[in-house]
Length: 322
Image (cartoon, rainbow, N blue to C red):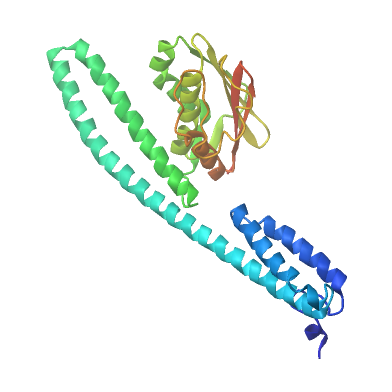
C-alpha cells in the first residue's frame, strides 16, 4: 500500500486516536460556526455525537470507533452543506424577485411621472396666461415633488446596477464646488429658507477638479445635503469643508441637532438601516447605502462621526484620478 493510501479521509494515520480525537473536536467547533440556523447545527451535532456514543462497546480509541466517527462526521458535514445550499438557493430566488419587482416598479413610475410632468407643464402655461400667481405657487410645489421622484427612481436604478457590479461611470473632469456643491446649494435654497438654515462653505483645497461621473457624484452630494437640511435643527448652519491630500479630494458635511443619539454612526451605511431622529419620520434606509456604493465605484469612501446631542459629520474621499 502506498503512503497516500495509508491514511483515512481525514488525513490521520490508523492507530493514532489522540490526533483523531483532536481533529474530531475541532471539526465539531467548525460545524457550530457554519452560516446556517444554529438550532439546525446543534440538532445535527447532538444526533451524530449520540450515535457515536452508542458504539462504546467497540472501544473509544479502537480503529472501528474512529471509522464510525469519521463516517458520521462526514455525514453531518454533508447535511449541513445541504441546508446551507438550500438557504443560498432561497436567497437567490428572493434577490431575483426583488430585482424584477424593482425593475417593474421603476419603469411604471417613470411612465406615470412623465405623464404627470407633461400635464404639470401645460398647467403652468395656462396659469401664466391667466396670471394666477396663487395657483402657480402650488404648481411649482408639484413640479418639485415630481423632480424629486424622478431623482429617487434614478438613484434606485443606479443602486441596483452598482449592486450587480455592472454600473460603468462616465468619467470626466468636474469641479466639485462649481458643478456640484454650488448647484445643489441653489437648488435647496427654498428648503434652507423654510428652516432658517444656511450653508457655510470653506474651500481649503488648492484642487477642486476630479475625474468622476458627474451624475453619480451629484446623487452622493444631494443625498448628504438633503439629509443635512432635513435632519438639521432650525436656525443652524450646515458646514461644508473641501480639502485635499496629495491623492484625494476630501469633502465634509456637518449639521447640528440636539437629538443626535448615541452610536448613530454604527451600521449607518448598511442597507435598510434607519435611525430615529427626534420627531422626523425615518427614511428608507437605502440613501447612505447607495452613497457608499457610488463612491466605491470611484475608488472612494465615506465615514461618519458624531457628538451625541450635538452634531453629525460625513466625510467623503474621492481620488483625483480614479
